[in-house]
Image 1 (cartoon, rainbow, N blue to C red):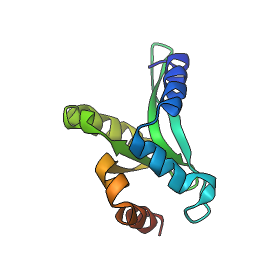
Image 2: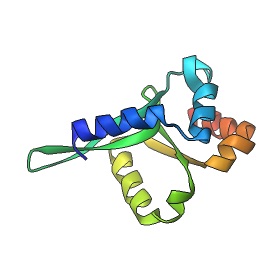
Image 3: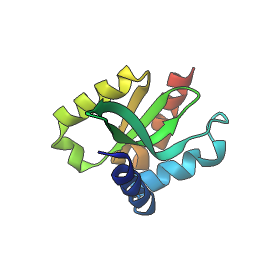
Image 4: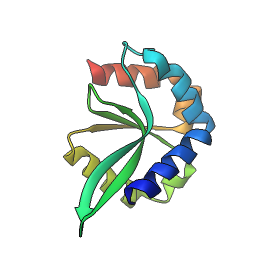
Length: 121
């Protein structure tokens, strides 16, 4: 997607968070995990084709540790190939991607937090 289209979509996503995204955001915002700043619905430029820059939207982003956190709802059961390709593009930018399901975030927060802390250490 191009910048302004992607930016508009990111703004809409911030306003219409899923229950899991909202829960995750409350747990990490204001530097609640190890004093780290997270951004939500963050634009990542990953490619340029014929002068057009293309962007992905990361659910959550931590710049200091080059960490992207994706929270996957049921749609991701049907787009596995796209997710793998997207993740490879993001990794080529130097980021690590951690994925969690909605259910993990909502029902197993301690495990999710531990996986994030393990990555950060």
